[in-house]
Amino acid sequence: MSRRFEAYIVIAQQEWELNLGSNARNMAVEFSKTKPVLYVNPAIDIKSIFKQIGTDHGRKRLKLALGFGKNTIKISETLWVHTPKTISYSINWLTNVFIYDFLNRRNGKGFFRSLKNAINELNWKTENCIVLNDSQMFTGLFTKKYLQPLLSFYYIRDNLIEHPYFKFHGRRIEPLTIELADAVFANSAYLADYGRNHNQLSLDIGQGCETDMYEANASYKEPADLGAISYPRIGYVGFLTGERLDICLLEQIAKAKKDWQIVLIGPEEMMFQQSGLHSLTNVHFLGSKKPDQLPSYIQHLDVCINPQLVNELTVGNYPRKIDEYLAMGKPTVATDTPAMKMFIPHVELAVGVEAYVGAIENALQPQRVEKKNSAINCAKIHTWETCIKNIFKIQNQLLDEQLYPAIILSQKY
Image (cartoon, rainbow, N blue to C red):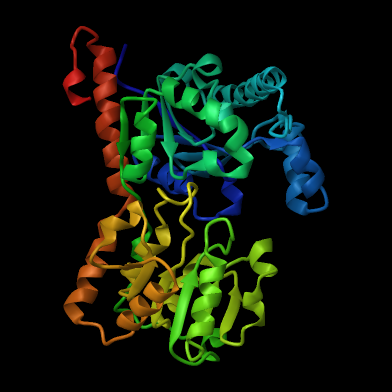
């Protein structure tokens, strides 16, 4: 067995085209600096076809799934994106395990058949490719069976089995998928510990952030919609979802401190749209912004917050926005969770409205230069380059084991 390999395959949860700032996308770009990379979009399922058929994007996805169009496109000299030529059964509602497993296997066959064709078109060999599976637990169960790559890694960035979509079947299938992986990587110690319950080689590789676009000492023009809001501005930047954020806490803070302006920047899902926050005069929804606009919004906030719910879904979550806040040198308050401990003393941690109000009041005090610079430096060390280097260490050890099978390297475990 040669330790040389040809390419990386990144099996993603999110479509490349949506550009939602996914970890898999960032890691694929970083991998592509050393080897060719094929980023694989999730397969479209029957339910999604009916939901999206009225949109241009949905019609495009359906055509590609049926084989009309170019399923593999070149993004750069070393990066390609593949949209599978297959339609998956929508099966997560099934409670019959036998029927579910049969159809899930069919879904896996279709997905990996399309992927193998793409690999062949690129003149690669599957046995010379390394797979990074971005928590695609159901499809990923069949990675070795239907693809047979050189190595297969499983990546955990969320406790997804606590999400309603994944919960029922995920609790029994994800452990099997983790067990079959050659190594498991996570973006927090909490999630790495979870992975280690099912695979001894489970490691926290840290979290990356595109901190280069966040320059605390630059002068960004104040956005017009933010400029219309008075001070002090207490802001959150990111997806507004009631599954992860504490709507009740935000309402309590806004009511307790009516002179504070609560600024929420990002797309809303239904729970936020229907919440009482919209009736409060000191709560402002500014909507979605492009990634390159975010530094200007963050710079013109007084305090940044992450009012996260504490539940099984979020307890091990590493919020990327914390690095974005700190990279801009902003005083930051966040919910106290195990994953947030690593940011002490750069972030004020709190639980409950009284603690949050007190922490925000502290954060509104004049900021010491040395504390600001220390926070910026903390964020700047959380890079994708570091994450990938941590993967490389384990990858090379595993390749060495394949090259020299008589050498027992168990001491690293």
